[in-house]
Length: 173
Image 1 (cartoon, rainbow, N blue to C red):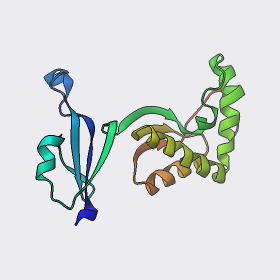
Image 2 (image 1 turned 90 degrees about the vertical axis):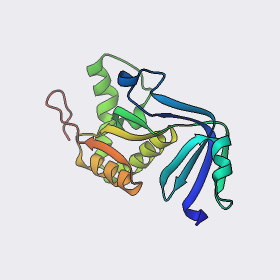
Image 3 (image 1 turned 45 degrees about the vertical axis):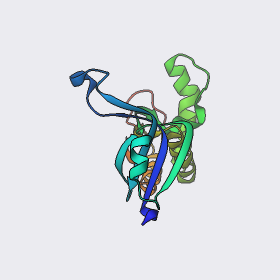
């Protein structure tokens, strides 16, 4: 039974209400020494470690993340998957930047193998940074979106994405 139950001890911060309705101070809980109990893939309890630890069955594994913070997954509401390889490229005027950096980079997404490789890297980076849900822009190439959705589905992630639609200054596909 312990294979389906696990507890995580760390500082924990999570939202409990809409701050617009209850005010900032009443909208979240923070536990400096918290415990998050997961059973069958779902959170069953969260609170102060001192209160919850004595109530745990002896066979439940407790993983301690000293000096770490557990939060819910982040949501990114605007990110461009095909621009993964050009992050940090030199900034210019928008149309010059698109023509010099963005469109040549995005043209590579007509190749499904390239799109598959970048989809893995892109989603690994999202997860590494705590982002579990995102509104993601692909390129004008269907291969980019197909690769992205296949990787997201493989990892059972909730994502919103689609093929970018452009009607001005777009490169030929």
